[in-house]
Length: 96
Image (cartoon, rainbow, N blue to C red; front, side, top):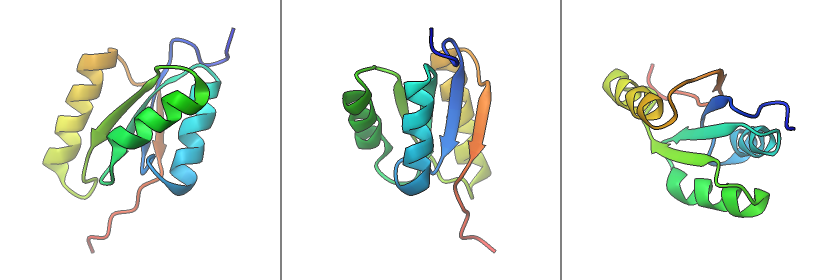
């Protein structure tokens, strides 16, 4: 059994770069992962699912510098997964 089976992780900035590595590692350990990113997170979710052989990613387009966008995303993640166990705050806001 994978260490994180039954857990849901949220990775901000999870579509590319180091966030993508976090996403892939969490999926390989059994977690369901919500990729929260301003980039094309749906394509990233599909690519991670394909590379890991699991249907474990949810792409949630979000601007982390916009409170309403974040609230909407959290509501969607909770609605679709029922929980958030592991937050990974990887995204950077460009707002001052």
